[in-house]
Image (cartoon, rainbow, N blue to C red):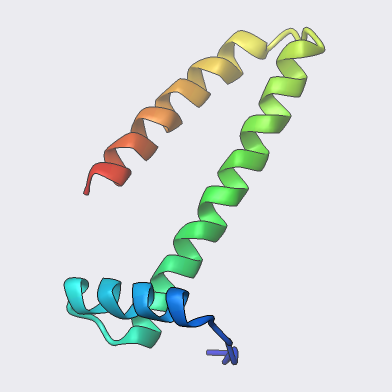
Length: 82
């Protein structure tokens, strides 16, 4: 596993500390979890933007892509509720 040296401002550090304590995780594990979650979220947003562009370009499979998008959106909403 690779390492990253991360500098946080005092406010972000305190928020991370509170999150780690609430989740019962060490700060580093909480930071790793949040970072991975944020990266997944960004990838999904980029995918959605591509789908929207495809839909706007009137791709023939746009309806199927939108149905897939709706299913993923529901899955993301379910994930956020946990």
